[in-house]
Image 1 (cartoon, rainbow, N blue to C red):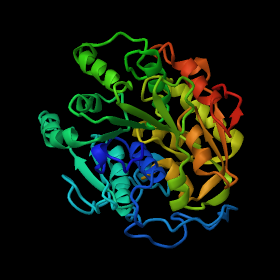
Image 2: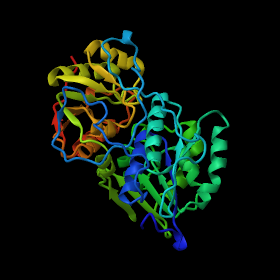
Image 3: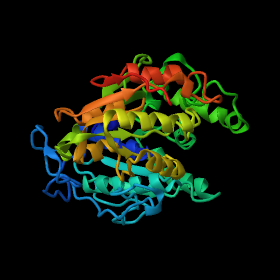
Image 4: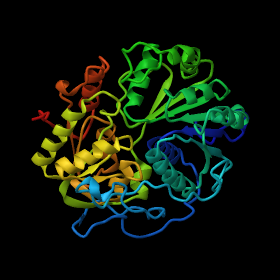
Length: 430
């Protein structure tokens, strides 16, 4: 169904819920594919890609549309005494135009009622990237509503109460994380007949597979463990959300993803995300002769041993001439300090999702990564630039004793299903 078509011939009221910068980016990609909004961005600006260095060389990509203006960046986020860390990109939240509570920014033209609701997390790095992405969304003409959904014990009750009316009136719900308990709870309120799940990284692969098999919704790195007290308490809500996300009785479900979908649930529409908005609005980037590395939060989630990870990064950096390390927003600061000191890498804290950072440039001619979402998304965002994305498998010896029994198989699947990437031999820690 077209996003412009509503029930009974009225424009669809669309409500999108996001909790991470990547989710918001993919909401913009979904809306762009469906022609929303249908008017030019409010503040287009011309100019070279931000951050272009004197040693970069122009890529062979065709010229793209002017990039939207971005808030100014602040200084380094890691202290100088941490080691050889320089030129870090700040994730300090930019001053948000408009109110942080309630609708702000321009309304979508053409009669389509589209509101993006940010269920703000508490992690400062994630909040900083979300602020910047919210500004980009407003510049593109979308309403953005910022909710301090986790700002204290009573915050969830205030948030749900404030959104109840919008949820009941919405004809379409777009969500970035169907595993989120917050989103699952909101799904029990809405009567929307159209549900859209946009990419939240590799978790999307697991969500589609679990839905196809009729399993309960559990994140892959927690699967195999014993349900805790909170899991059991929330089980009825989770089961209700899974039923809501199963097409039936005129209810339509769409999955918008750049990830490979091998098990498609009956009745679910799968739409490919090729990062058309990102490529149209940013770049082409400047390409440097060196190599960059993409960090992962597998240590923070308890999947990979920290010492093994540090050794693997050091060995990969030496073998491939890596100079910069793009940190994942969830990576621990202490771990990053050690990486800077022991490897000599420049640690970069991106203030936008990596797909946008890479598209703006400068970016290395080779980008190394461990199994993660970016091995699927970066080749799409950087299509036509000549940048090579290489992925290093996770050695089973790197896994922690508490890692999910499914961890190795899932991570291998992430790598094995990636297109347009080069696979590297696993680097054994010294």
